[in-house]
Length: 229
Image (cartoon, rainbow, N blue to C red; front, side, top):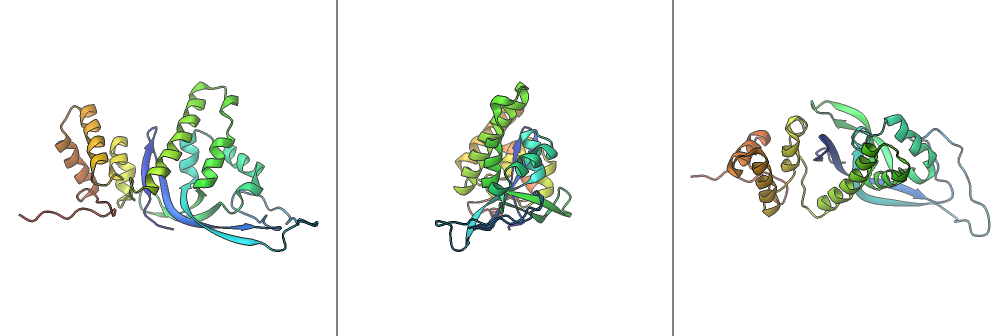
């Protein structure tokens, strides 16, 4: 798993997306203990049409830290865990524990949810049954946010943040700017922040450079070289 995430702001809170991979077992015996599932006895499929052996699938995807997911969707961690356990067979193999840096750079063991599992969870939350209007709107907004963000990452429109401490501590508008490579998308985003702050794009670029500690990143996700006069 890549140790540098793409960090995007959702309703004032950072959400991290880590590039990683998962191995899924598809076959007659695929229920095993996991960090969020209580141990269950292995089951067997018997009968004329039962598969003869298991198959292992390797998927390249992105993962979201469990705490980030719960904060963004506005649900208590215990409530989300209950949702996962109610569909343990579906989500088996799509989450695991990894050590990732926190906002201070300390490595912490954290449960990571694959993008596919996060998608399944947000759609498992039935918005029609949520009585609180604010919570329902937040869940719907996060459903759209995760689909859009993953699409932008896969198309190279967002890049990994190299200074994780900065991405947590800087203002929300600048958290999103830090992941944008140089180009028209960044220029438009900088212009919007400048209008919001009542300043110039040049001022926003300078603040962004101070926060990052380098020039804007290029399409490959590395800082552009300083011009030599």
